[in-house]
Each structure stands twice: as C-alpha cells, then as structure tokens.
Image 1: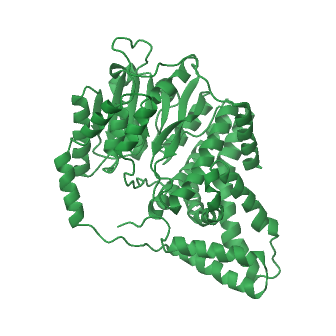
Image 2: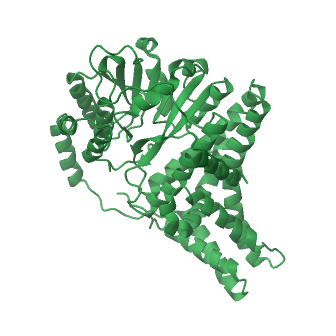
Image 3: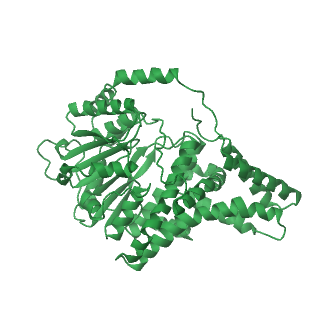
Length: 504
C-alpha cells in the first residue's frame, strides 16, 4: 500500500504538472563583473578520501560553475591518508587557485567521525559566518555550471526553507547488469519517493550530496554530528523536527558514478541500511517529544524508519530465504501463490515504472533485490543493536567513469562557450601530471589479476534454495519450484561474484 500510494502521488504530480517554483531567476551566462549584489555568498564543499580516480573531475566541475567568483568559496575537504592522493589533490587546488578561483585545501590528520567529522571541522572555520548557503558534492559528483543558479533562487522569500536537493543522474548506468539494477532502485527513489515527499509533506531524507543548505538551518538544528554513518539523514531529521522545510528539484540533475563491483555495492548498501537503524535508536525519543504535529511524527516513525528501513528488509529476508524453503520440507506449512508471486511481482512492476527502459530486467531485478535482502537484513540488525562493524565507514570505490567530455557536455547545456570550457578542462590535467604518471607506472608494475571473491552467506543460501527447489520438483509444487530455482541461481551468481566488475 505504501508503494501504491507513492505511485499515485507521483502520477498526480505528473498530471497536474506540479513542481517547485522560485520567486526569481538568475540570467544564464557568465556574470558580469560588478553586477553581483543579487548573488548571495555560497560555500561549496567537496569531501573526499583517497579518491584519486575522480578528484580532478569533481574539482573542475565546481570551479567552472556559473557564479561570481568573489561570491563563492570552494573547500576541498581531503581526508586522504595516502600521501600520493594528498599531493595530487593539493596540486589540483593550487592550479585552480592560480586561475583566480577562491578555493582552499583542508586536510585532517585524524579522520575522526568520517564524513560527518570532516564537514563539522570545515564548518568551524571563522570565515563561515560570511556565507549564507553551503552546497555539498561528493568526490564523484559533477554539477552542471548552472547548478547554483537553479537551486539558490528557491531560498528567496522562503525564510523557513533549509534544503534544496537535486536529483542524481548516472554516467555509467548501462555499464553492466549491476549498474542497470541499481538504476532501477535509485530512479524510483528520486522520481517517486523524494518527489512525492517533497511536494506533499516538505520533508525527505537528505542524500548527502548534490544539495544546498541554508547555513542558519544547519546551526539551528545542531550542525553535523558524528553519532551515525548516515550524517545526511541525521541532519535532515533534526532539521525537520526543528520546523524547517525542504524542496526537491526533480529536473535539476547532478551526474555521478554507480559502484560497478558487487563488493563496493555490498559495502555501500550495508552502510545505507545500518545507519538508519543507528539513527532511529538515537532519535526515537526526540521524535516523540518534538513539537511537530502527530501526522509528521507518525510518518517519521512508521513510514520513514520502520516500514521502509526495517520491516521491508526483514520481510524480504525471512519470507524468501527462510520461510519459503521451510514450507517445502514441512508439508503442514503452506504459502499461497499470491504471497510468493503476485505481491513481489506487483512491487517489482511499481519499482520499475520510473525507469521504463529497464522493463527487460524486471525478473533479474526481483531476484537480485531478494538476494540483497541478506545484506540489508544483516546491516539492519547490526545497526539496531550496535553489532560488529556497523559504525565503520568504507568509502565506495569509484572507477572514474566520468570524463572530460561529460563536463564539456554540461557546459553546452547551459549555452556557454565550449572553447573556454575545453581549455579549462584540458588545463585541469596539468597539475600533478608528473606525479600522476609515476602513479600509473607504479600501478602497472604492481597490478594484480582480477579475481572473483566468494561470499559464503550467499553460497549457503544458494545451496538451501536449490535443495528446496529439488524437493519441490519431486513433490510437484508448481510455482514454488520455479521461484526457488531461479532465486537459488541468483544467490549462486552473486555468491560467486559473477555480477558486476571484479576487483584486484
């Protein structure tokens, strides 16, 4: 019912053509010198950690944004513990500084609090009081040059607006089967969940990047806290409880990269599902005692946390990985076909509607989501009860799929000079060129053969499901056999690391 209501809300938005509108617009094109009074002071932050594959693209994309240079400061927040990465990023910052961009390099010796600690440290600088807004971009994100001109105007006249969130777009969504399946999930998240929640209740979870915050709102709700691995969701919940409003812009896209290996995706999903449970345990009483109305409290507790973050992974894992196989070996237990087939089928169709080109992948998507329920369930339990490495933050591995051509394309979209941008981008490869060449030579010498990893939990469940499928075939249980067979094969493929790219 939650999915159905979300889809109906999205359909209503499409039919009525509802979208947030700003009270003013900035002219497109380069800002003339001296005509900058209408442009507020904006701080742009790029947190990164050992991300040598993408640092140049992200810094270049931010530095060529169409905003008066004297009204924007770029902070490159480097948490790298690799000396080569630090030197390359510092050289890139110095190069853009020499070109007249107001850009600073900040490096922490101790990476306490991970990304939250990095952002918190940056916001403690004395000069922050001179800035009204802060835009945040992770290291693989490349905003279009007109990003600030499309987001900042929404704050004009809306003094209770805290956040403007843009949509993610993916440069490698068609790279392999794994990225195609991720695109289905994230398309539903942005097209449906974020848009519907933004229009109807003025609240949604901050995505941690590609968003602009009012600095006053950040300070009002306590700033960045290091208590969970989902600092973005934490700050959004606290801002909502303090009465601040959010705006989601579905038509403003920021390009980024999807993880292409199962290992990287698994670690990312573990953090994304353990963090919300950490946060729910910490802020449950704050929600109950907050001054927001009962409807907003109910939405936060029952929908935002319990249903979407806890019940859904629990339901998928227990039903398809435990209960269904047991019914095959216990004749007195029985699951009706609508539980096994119709409900999952309807859920998959609803999820895939925002990405209609992905319809050929609907069966792999359903099987893969059930397979990932093992990781999500484990993460959810770990986060809820503070088990294992639930508080560990592992940076998602990037391959640097975005290219200089992408940035040129972004500049073309805003009708700016292609020649000027090409020169900017070509020069972005100048800084640290010798160091980069040395690193490439070293990496060629030390390269290891890519290999498949083995995931024991997935392989164990593959054995159980395939055994249950064999037992179902002998007892002629029809639809249960096909589901168990294909689900078992799905677990086997993932357990042998045959989906996505392999790692060295």
